[in-house]
Image (tube, rainbow, N blue to C red; front, side):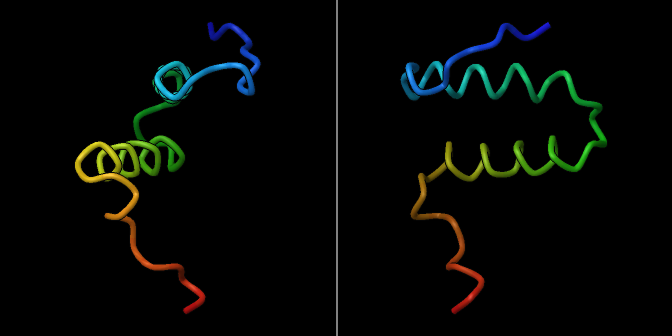
Length: 57
């Protein structure tokens, strides 16, 4: 079970750990889990510069 956390008071590493813990509780086929895992992969590999341009351009 996830312990409630005041996300305004945590640093980047703690926020990431909290999000990863929450995502692991979702079923593997859950779309939010798939989205999180892909986004985490992109940001870990190359940072926000690797994200695609905004969709409204």
